[in-house]
Image (cartoon, rainbow, N blue to C red; front, side, top):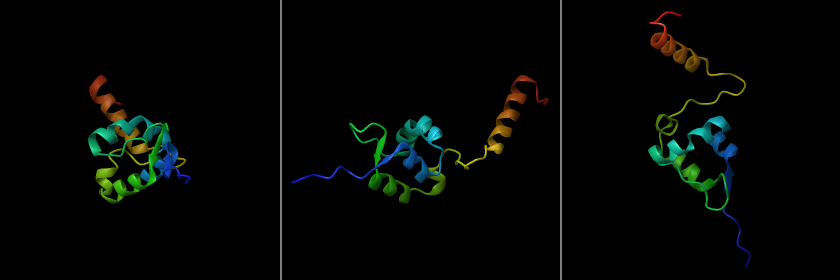
Length: 98
């Protein structure tokens, strides 16, 4: 009897479910796992996650809890975060001047 492999998601597909860019998801997946209980990758399959586990995790977490990172807006930079970072750098290194 042939066993079907588990339904799985690539890093790109998982990022899309979380409304994050794939690059940002790859950088922060460790934090999601350690601090937010996100499912671990499927053993032996590289960067792949169980579709059922990811969808179950998303359903069980409020959007604010499951998205501790900024969402990805296709084709646009996150201007708010850039401005916030710019302001913090200015405060730290230039005494608040811009």
